[in-house]
Image (cartoon, rainbow, N blue to C red):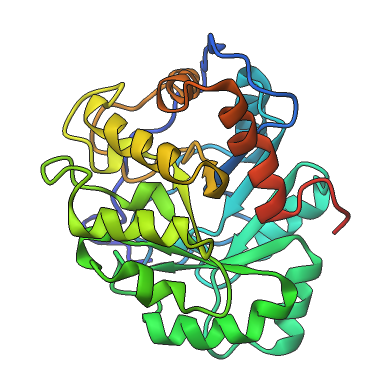
Length: 297
């Protein structure tokens, strides 16, 4: 990285480490299906051209947050700060095989041997970031999906659903199941009837796709508890409760607005999913189906 301060990656607020215990009691095997975790810089060097400075929090901080709020399992999503070097999340899973699974970043050049190693190490899919210029193209990810389908993987997409009003046909034809991050990053101004969000609902109803109830602050125009995103969460739960998982999005990187307390984010689940049976499916059963929790690596 350049010694020029102007070239240094930007620094964003760090997550609250004084997480308070939520009012909502989570089921015993509840899973947090979306988080970005970082390792010690001397062991896991980050890319010089990274988009932001990693917050000074480590895996132990993430697991401590889980212990406070009552979460038993977590899914580590590879951060772009490490590029396609997935060694940190692999090491983290190997150290916590009953507690963690992962989503990798990969490229077209990955070998079948490398894919098999990732699969045997608890990786359950790869991520495609379509909000960043560095993300894989859709058709490249489709080709990679053919290579990973026998591992039982899925393809996870970060995208804005209103950029894809044909989302259900575009991704529903993938050889693997697909997962849409952060409720599709819906636009509160256009509402649940917007074409892209309706396509997301059709994708979930088809049984070919999933969505994560996570990160409302990414597109909300409101302060916590992000009331303008509640109609989107309700629409997803009403349409396809068996095709949803929940994620904390810890440590809330690149956040320029109010940093949420993770205890409050857990309590928000009760507003989004008022029915206890549906909550248990989303937090436990669905996560087990998608990530293989409860099964040996």
